[in-house]
Image 1 (cartoon, one colour):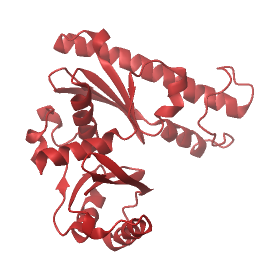
Image 2 (image 1 turned 45 degrees about the vertical axis):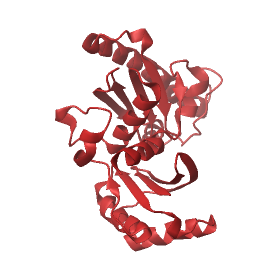
Image 3 (image 1 turned 30 degrees about the vertical axis):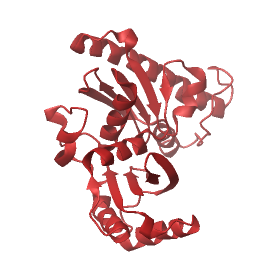
Image 4 (image 1 turned 120 degrees about the vertical axis):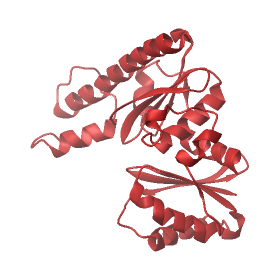
Length: 263
């Protein structure tokens, strides 16, 4: 089995794949202060509880946007598999079916690379990946597999938490669609601004990106597919038609696909 690890700013997602089948998935908080011993103990305990033998795992692949956690998780995967993991980074980019702009080789988030690889291989056409994470990201890939560019803004929960932390009287609110945009109490007022505000942000930014993609590549903007991933895509899904496809496990699937290419 393949051990795939996606380390984000808020959560670490760990998955086990048998061939193309996702066998198991776990989440834990990202904490750069935890040691490899602590993470190993947690992960091995989760595997035991799931009835999965350590000996069944023969390879690992790692994506991280938290540099301080790369070292500890290299150690974790070596303990579990007995070999070094594949690390998503510039050293393997030339082997991938997507092309990264030279100016972004050392800057692009490795999770976005995984997203781009999986989205392009799935759709086989020009597309935009909208990833609802700690940051809300838009990755544009043309019909030849070139990453044309990326747009980044604060994620929905990041915006809510910032509002809660930096104001004296505004509470933290559930991320739910309010009855309408006319909030008549504090909770509905915040939900109106956040949910309908992000709906407008996503729809308008996708529209602008499509226009710029058409101008750069010549591919018709009305044929560009929009794929949403990340847990919070479900917040906007009921109130927008901007997404053609939803795949919450896109990053993990990208890791699996890259491992198959590189191994």
